[in-house]
Length: 270
Image 1 (cartoon, rainbow, N blue to C red):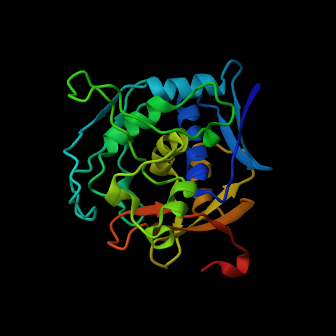
Image 2: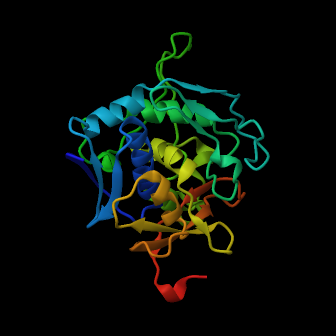
Image 3: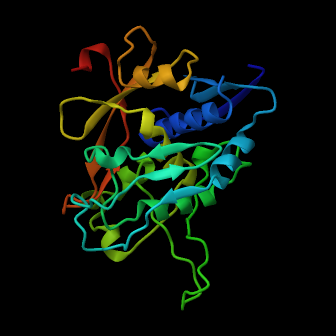
C-alpha cells in the first residue's frame, strides 16, 4: 500500500460505521489489496498509489445498477413486502445486494422503494467531500420530464443514520413526520454506503428484539477478515464494541430506524 484514505467517523452512529464498511467493500473490489481499520475517530484505508476518496465515491455514484422498482404504497405495513428484490451493482464493482431479507435489521417500510432511494442517495453524493458522512442535504430524485409539476420528488432515506433515526421518533416529537409527508436533510453517503456495507458486514444479534452489537476493529484488514470481526467471530481482534437498536419510529410499529449506539464492556455482552 502506498496511499491512505481517511474519513472522519462517529463509531457510535451505526449508519456511519456500516458506511465505512461499505467504503471498504467498494475499495477492495476496485483495488483488491485494500485494507481498512478504525482509529481515533477516523476510518483509514490503505490503498494503491493513485487511489483516492473522490475516485472511489465517483465510481460508486457512476456504477450502473439493476433492480426492480415498484409502486410506492403508503398503506403498506412494511412487514410483508415480498417485492423488495435484489439490487445489482454492475462492473466495475460487481456486487449483489439482498441482505434486507433479514427484516429485524431492515429499517425502511414497504411503502418505500429501495431502488429509487438508493439511486437518489448515490446521485447526491459529492465526491469532493473530505468528510462525506457529515454532508447533509435534502435529496431529490432525478428530474422527470414527464412529471406534470416539473419538480423532482424529495426522497426520504433508509434511516440508517442515527442522526435521523433518533430524532424521528414520533413518541418523542409528538407526531409522525411520515404521516405528513415531511422531509429534512439527510446524509446521502451514509444512507447509500450503509446499504452496501451491510451485505457482508453484519452486526451480531444480542438476543434482545432488534438489538445488535458490532466491533469497530483497530487492525488493518481486508473485508474477508473484517466482516467476521464485526460480528464477534474473531475474538482476538481488538476494537471498540458498540450496541444499537433498530427501533420503531412510529406507534404503528412499521417504520424503523437505526438509533445511536452505546459503547459496551465485556460485562455487557450476552
